[in-house]
Length: 315
Image (cartoon, rainbow, N blue to C red; front, side):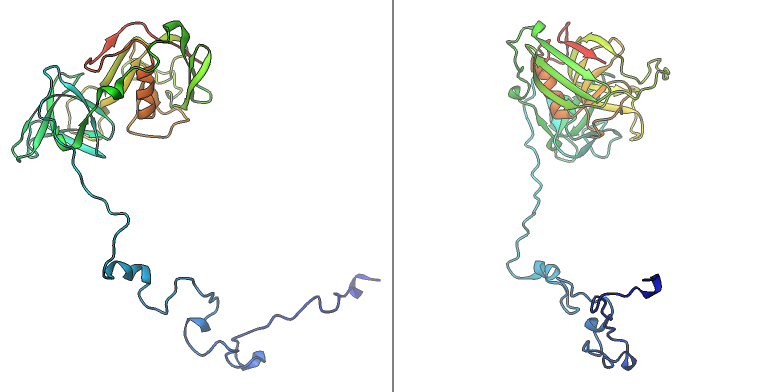
């Protein structure tokens, strides 16, 4: 048998039925498709939600009598705290963002924008020019005061900052950071109790304008200073939203003299790869857990605590 003598098996190949190609196709002028309309068009597949050109039902549904929106969103502002302790109290931003002002008036000069889950020290409250309650905030870095709408912040309770495993001795707690896998591990008595992804510093050893490179240092360290809220950045008083100013960085645990720390992060959630200027960025809730778990212990009304605490191994 030669190549040109090969033939297909009987009835293994069937001629494709050509429909809707006119009388010359041998199936009639329209081949059962009708003369006009969507069903007569090539590629018609009978869409599940096609309703003959009418307004789709899912779009007509809101206009039907008795319709209820299952995803209704209601604005429920936070109740303002009328009595603030003389030493101040720690608050957390509870809305996507709020703009601070020089005075308790939306028409006054704007300052920083505070974002969701950032923290701030409130030292007083009062009625503003617009008839609403405003909080007076104290900036921990610049020692200036500015104002934010009270309904945009909530007070952090003592239960939310109660120490975790406070009875475990210092020598039996340890933090380990793997810069290669971008992970953090916490141990008690040699047993793993916490593990999460982090974002360390961008691996660049060249000093920046402040003389500090962005790479996170490796080696052994200790928690030295803890603050529930810290203004980080260039330290400028500016309303510029593009400026490198990060007021209200939450749950900060410093472990170097140059200001490298574990802290919550409200400006990104891309954990698992280097992103920072040297610090170890964490999810805000996880940074709060670490803040509560590590030593030294910080009391709820303290703005900072200094003391050698939990050992850290970074590599």
